[in-house]
Length: 139
Image 1 (cartoon, rainbow, N blue to C red):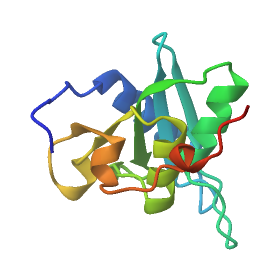
Image 2 (cartoon, helix red, strand yellow):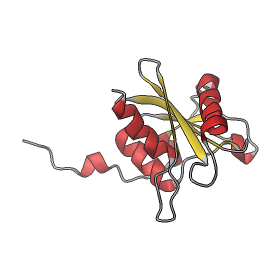
Image 3 (cartoon, one colour):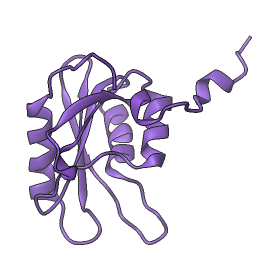
């Protein structure tokens, strides 16, 4: 972890928790995510579970944000249904978040019994492969 300890965006956590409480129903939707745009807007989404490996809430959030004209997210959080609290992103979501938003902050901690805290995505994926760094420059 770095010495920087930005404050937890509790409004964002509450937004994700409210979506998890009101929109996650049954086995198809078990996780909610909320993201804070650079302009302050909050975008929310739920996962779309499917036995073939449907998208996590964080990935649905990226598409929902783009659909609302939000292409930069400052902070993201995922919350489980049934009051499971904050859940850190899976490995696939960590990689996608790093590729789309290399500076995004992620709220983690609560679901593991720790107090929620904010970390940069790169801290969750150390020594990572950054897709953009391996693309040929368009000339």
